[in-house]
Image (cartoon, rainbow, N blue to C red; front, side, top):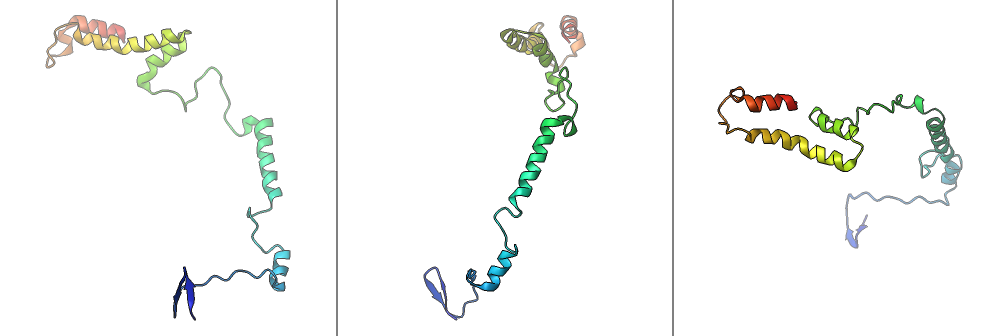
Length: 141
């Protein structure tokens, strides 16, 4: 049986040929009339709309059923910053002015970095050999 594939004719080919359905066939039309076909959505649209309306209704009428209790005075755990951002995070929560908050955010790490240059420190010496730097560092913390 010759098979045409992309303009080429293959003889004795084992390429499967897909047969298009004949919608004039009475047996096929009877099966489709009984609902044995596959519609576009996979299930009737009114069932999908029913589920969507129920979910949206629950979300609007009873939001506490589908989520957690909300505390407006506590930061959610999902957006809580890491422990090393905690001082800067607290500064931003306390200071009402945005510009002052940004300046304080820059000030915190620069203050800690300036401690390194207060005394002429040998990097192989213990930090406690330098009492001025140690005292200021502990006061900043």
